[in-house]
Image (cartoon, rainbow, N blue to C red; front, side, top):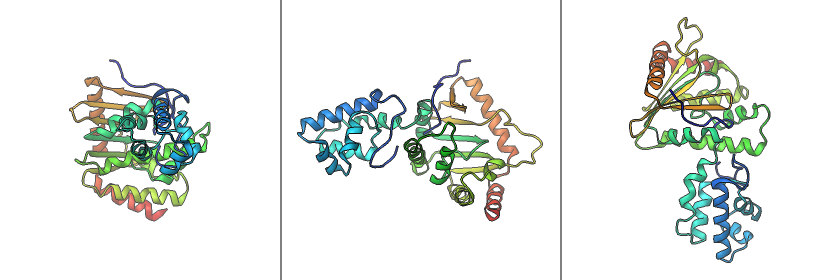
Length: 291
């Protein structure tokens, strides 16, 4: 049995912003650098200085320089507007998807693509609220706890990218999403009281969607099917079933059917052992009243 996927990186997760964000790969390499070179060629061919292009797009000349040199990841809106202003005829927008992938740490990129296109996602979490459910404030608090510390630009990059992942909730047709969350995750006050309250409120809001089910695994369960740790089950449009496991800066995508089936059975047991969805929401409401 051979796992597939990436084995390097940091945690998951560029969003809008005047300066954009730094790619995970080294400056001057990869698709971000290729986009930057193309942007510079088109700008030069149009006879524009960086300040002029930036003025038309609402960015500074230094931001344009950062994009051209592959030091920052341009947000999707910038790519669309630059393609239009420079008369690129789709040359820049053709790179938009690959540039967007570069906003995530290397090890999460394959999983992020599968997640964005999934028809079903089933998630078991043991340490923090899953990124798909996190508020911006909670996500920022999580990234600020990283050791060694992340710099502020990287934190904002990760937060923005994590928020973009939540577009899955608005996608049509709606994917089926389920989450089993350990009680300890909900009671751990990451970011402080106000952040915790906002996070619990967001969980209740997401749980109102008909395609979303959230269950809590209480402390007092004597039997527990998930002691091996967190994981995510993914089903694609083509009917492929994949398991994603992440720990300590490493990740695996498992596609071998026997392994995935074992984890599907494990998730089914977890759901049976956890509180039912309605009782889980009552549990979260009670926690919210206590914070």
